[in-house]
Amino acid sequence: MPTTPTLAVATDFILSHATEQDLNRITETVKQRRTALAAIRSASLTTGTPVRIVNIKPRYLHGLTGTLGPIDGKHVTVTLDAESTDRLRFTPSNKRFPVPYEATSYDVPGVPLSCCLPT
Image (tube, one colour):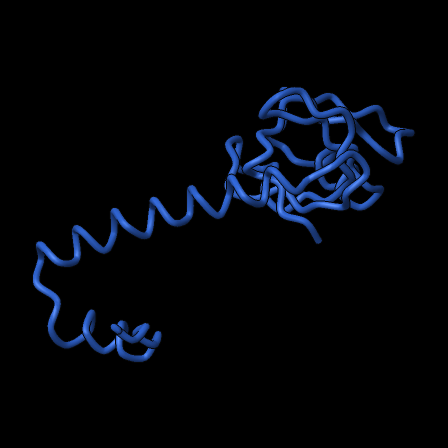
């Protein structure tokens, strides 16, 4: 029965022995694994879960935190916490989400579930 390789063995192979063709296959495999992990993570998210927004465009949304609101298929509304609301309000490149001056939270609709990392 084959043994499962360790991370150290895989890393050593990549650093010392992998060809260009091997690296292309490894890169594609990593992309597939990331997609699978994002799908698993997305399936576990529910309304009210605290999250950090990651890997999203526009980039100024990356790193904002809040809680999940209504989930609509593969997208969700994220209600930002006070700190992230302020950060979004004062982001010069933000033209899409006009945050009122007095707001202490703000709803960002249409965030892909795959971009929501539970905190």
